[in-house]
Amino acid sequence: MALPLMESFGHRAFAATKSSVAPLRMAFLYTPNGVNEDQWRPRGEGAGYEFGPSMRGILEGHRQDFSIISGLCHDKARSNGDGGGDHARATATFLTGVQAKKTAGADIHLGISVDQLAADKVGHLTKLGSLEISTDGQRSAGRCDSGYSCAYQFNLSWRNDTMPMAPEMDPRLVFERVFGAGAGGNSPEAKRRHAMEKGVLDTVLDAAKTLQGKVNAQDRAKLDEYFSSVRDIETRIERAEKLTKDLPADVHAPSGIPESYEEHIHTMFDILALAFQTDSTRVSTFLLAHDGSNRSFPEIGVPENHHGISHHQHDPEKLRKIALIDQFYLRQLAYFMTKLKATKDGDSNLLDNSMIVYGSGISDPDRHDHSHLPVILAGRGRGTLTPGGHIALQANETPMTNLYLSLLDRMGVPAERIGDSTGKLEGI
Image (tube, rainbow, N blue to C red; front, side, top):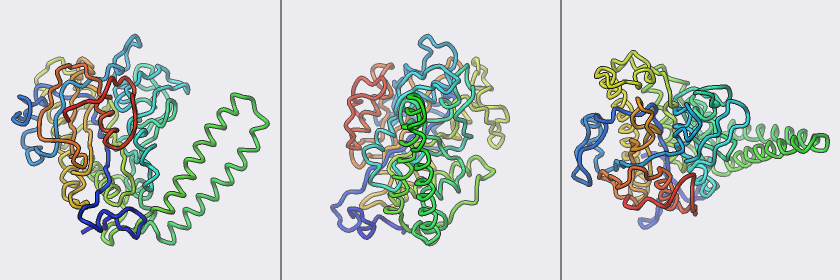
């Protein structure tokens, strides 16, 4: 059995008594470029629904562990007068529900994402307030889709209107961020590194403060934002020193980015599951690939790039290959659910004590449709969710952010609104 949360680490122990409660975790998993809707969609509603062809043979073993939600939309991913750029808006809007300012310059503007609202409330309880990961590249500047900054397309998580939370794609760096260098986060090497980081931050902060009296008001505002970022890093380091835990003896840091895309995804899921298990974080986002991704999948018989064939124009062969890619990503979700379900967590398991949102900001990629989104909600939310059915919403224009309000409520996060939300989503 892997190392559980224990009282000796300063947490309210839930392993000590049978009646105690495990913490609730939240993760958001993004897949790009929509789906083959005819193959992905379930048949029927409620608990008696039938899997669509893309899910058959992949998710049967987890039928009681998740719900499929149909009828959610992201209106702010539509052009709304801004012209092209649906892929940039799809990624940017997915967790914010906010219309991205159309710019390729430094004046990006969006909104805080649901994960960061949760991190603001529960992040102080763990080493990392949130964990942002990806198996894609990272671009936070430059021009990407139709005049939108790459920051919109390559970031799911946003700390505020202008600050994306850049995800890390190297498993080794993610591992070291979560657990520290080496197998033990409390090792002398890790402690020396924390002290060095703290010293560097103090030096940089002191040097920067001397500039405040020598710059104009606009630059002082920039410095204030800089100081806020430095203080945030300092807080994370101090939290790491207090909350770092030793890892099981058989857990070792990954060596780097695997050549296989699937192995890369699995490695990231393994680290995320371990981060949840050790209560190193309770909030995470995973951008499996940015919307508009040109990744090819020769290992499953799709040598063409994903974005290219997503504009299928009802070509049967392109639709067949899109369904193969959909199945590939669903297998990754099944892997993660299996991993979480096999990990004991208090009186239950990690999947039961989690809320996992899996989906895309586009439904039919040929039309760049942002309604009727393909969304799966996995986990039992520590007994607050009722998985096992197909939830077909009466209105196909229900904001995706309504779902987020409901999840935040379960995390104990008071939020009246996020993005374009109109109220909490009931019946989940």
